[in-house]
Image 1 (cartoon, one colour):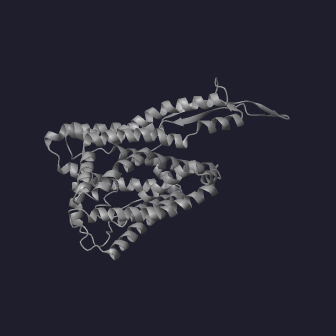
Image 2 (tube, rainbow, N blue to C red):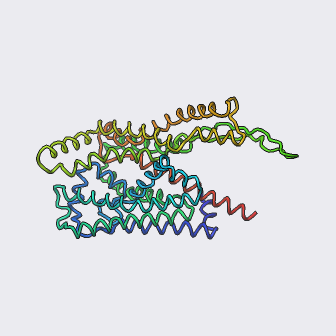
Image 3 (tube, rainbow, N blue to C red):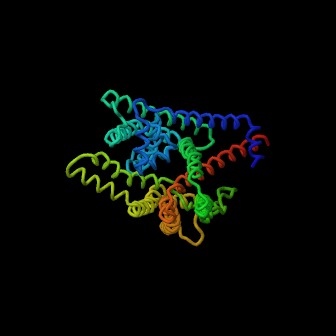
Length: 423
């Protein structure tokens, strides 16, 4: 490992890219501690401590919500816009054509995604401000129309700033910029979690702490295995004779990943499961029938068993849905047939399509089950151990490990290119 660090340091371009990415992450963490003016920070912390859903989002964002930072929304609006355009590309013919135009088409879709991020950020900023304003705590004591508009624009500007930083990082080819920003937010909360665990430690908790450490290690191993796991479907290409030359005749494989959907199903699921509770929070302090229904909705989703069950089912289902969106057996079968390729023992065309769909469905089941279990892992541990001082965020571990693997692969690729150029 140290040899690789020395290699990175010796290559000037790669060293500068790594230092640039680290500098950008430091700037982002500094921005996370710049609060939006006009907030009662102490009352905000009390509110987040008593709200399980927003408390979870605060931990996931690296404490930006607790500080009511200018980047409190993180890159969530940009991710939402990206997902929307990925789905629209499947149903809107013009966007589908753009997605097939290679890099030029992708740049246009990225431009549309950036523009869509701004109204989404404004909408989310407005919803969050109104939610805090309607709480029983005086979090926004002097909120008026001018103040509201200024806060919305400030928070939206913070999201655009993060989006820009993410794209600058991506250009350096040291990993995906947006993923690294989320990675930095999760890792920023690690020291506080360790400090909290150390403060709450008692000799009687030794067994629980050892159990949590063992489960954390097992989770990391599981994430690596599932993230890197794939089924290699053998593919052969028939020989073609053109004049005096022979083409084809090669044997290769088609990799089908176990977890092709990544963490997108978890993002879908958590967005849907948080939506009813967040809407209900607007009416919970009112009077009449609407307030009564809102309190029942909040109580229903605060039930750990109901929350875990719905979360599990949604993640499992969205894994199948998103894989179906990005994986097309029909197109793969057509491309193989057009290029003279075939799967040994399987007829080209419809039979190949059915074989790929059947194989992928079995792989999806393993990936979907793993993602669903990872998503509800903290809830399961709290239910079995009865402790709130420790929590292994399965989703956080999944993101951290996946980003680390992807970044390492991109650095390795640059090292290989450098060694190749030297030859």
